[in-house]
Amino acid sequence: MKLRVSLRIVVLSTLLCSLAIPGVLPRVVSAQTQDSGVALQKGFRTGYSDGYMSGYRDTIDSLGKDVTRHTDYANADRAYSKEYGTIEDYRDGYQQGFESGYATGYDRKTFESTIPAELKKRGVIAVAAQTTDTTVAADNSTATSTANTTTPASTAPETPAIPTNNAIIIIPRDTELILELQEDINTEQSREGEKFTAKVVSPSEIAGATIEGRISKVLKPGRIKRRSELLLSFDRIVLSDSRWSNFSGTLIEVMAVKGDNISRVDVEGTAVGKSSVKSDVIRIGATTGTGALIGGLVGGPVGLGVGAGMGAAFGVGAVVIDRGKHIRLNRNQQVRIKTAYETQIR
Image 1 (cartoon, rainbow, N blue to C red):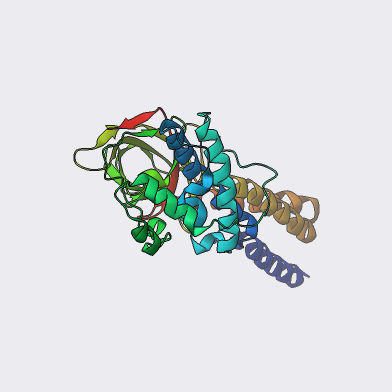
Image 2: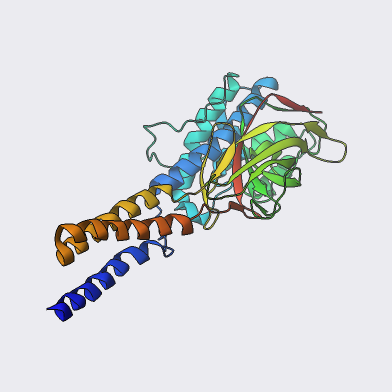
């Protein structure tokens, strides 16, 4: 009889371990499937930002309200990445965003970053090539019609250039910029006060400009303060050695890449690392319940209490092992920021 009970204890204890231990081991996260909605939304946000700056510039230059004069609207592929989805969906969203942003900027209204709930596929609008050529001629009085005919319209977005003339560049308040980090930044090795740089990807009018910034806050993950935190400050925008301006912006989004371990960005612009608190709570409850079940099968009411204690012990061990993760921003990773005030670059 004692031998039979002992065998049952061994078998059920093995079962308890098999249920509890896998929860401690790292889990493989499957890649998220891309659908048309992702490309459509990514395109809309980039297009809106580009369109807003274009509309704002057109109204300052006293030009008519016309999105089709802009090459970026016609091509609708700036800042596209195949990870977003199909180029067709991205271009569709880009043009819709450009139209919305252009109208807002032209009327000098506040930048609106919210993606419309009714956003859906509409189809890309083809823009005649001669429309773009006419615009080029209007912007450059020395260019000949022959040159406009022979210059491909698609070359502009492929190699975005910082404006070389001395026109004043105005970046309105609350404008969203997409930046590409030029250095690795993480909560494990980076220190508060360290400087970093980023290249402007969007809006197109200032694409290629350099944003200089510094790390304002680094909080490492731990057992008491479980989540890591990283706060970046953006201090200056530079077009060239002679053209720059003080600048201020707030981080609002980090374009997710595998292993960056970012859970969210809070309203103050702080990137918050991932935590396993929720899974720990679930694991404690699961192992306690499993232990109670096994204890009850083996030893009746007494075994019920003992088993519950054993299960809880497994859970507590898991809590100690599963700490927060370090935030890791990689070189060339893109982030989205919002300007704090109007910036003029002379």
